[in-house]
Image (tube, rainbow, N blue to C red; front, side, top):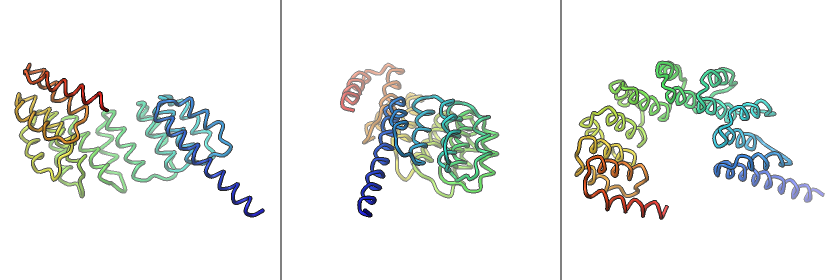
Amino acid sequence: MHRLRHHAALASSRLLVRDNQRITALARAGDVAAARRVFDAMPRRDAVSWNALLTALWRAGRDLPAARSLFDDMPSRNVISWNSIIAGCLAHGDLAAASAYFARAPRRNVASWNAMLAGLVRLGSMEDARSLFDQMPERNVVSYTTMVDGLARCGEVASARELFDAMPTRNLVSWAAMISGYVDNNMLEEARKLFEAMPEKNVVACTAMITGYCKEGDLQNARRLFDGIRAKDVISWNAIISGMLHRLQFPFLPIFFLFLLYLEYQ
């Protein structure tokens, strides 16, 4: 009898894990209705089930009211649930609702603060973002990078660089954000110096520099940098193609045909 109960519990746990994975996979594929059907048919649900559908509703389904209704129906919530609904409200531009959930959250971690910070930056509320950043009990590289990117995007490049220099640790995204900020504000020389100091170049930073070189009409350096990227993505291809097209350079056609081949094999 004990062995039978053990096997039944094991089978139930496996079914729960499988259904949770199905909800996540269907949501990633954009089929939120199917994800909801799996959720509704589940004999047992856990926090992962609820959180997976919650995120699917506001992200893939773009249905914030349904997400908020599901959040209200949750039998229990953890910090991931609160972070998800905050991020969802911000993704849909509802700053008031996000702020209300953030204030109500019984427990916040650094991801909670980062979700709120990223939303404020995305909505262009940099004064509120800076105030929130200053209040954070704990910051990580994501917090700093979000602020660097936001400050640079709104033209406060000096403040962005000051914060970048003050970062306890930096990753490739941090470097790329500051370099992109310089390029977006037509400060190519500063971007070049920082790019050269970058310990390891990634495709984002290289693409930003390609864009900068193309802006300056320096297609030779843009092409040299592009050719050196091992793992080119659609954005890097677009940067070099648009730069050559803008300058009406004849090498544009062979580059464009290579791009079509790249898309075919993705």
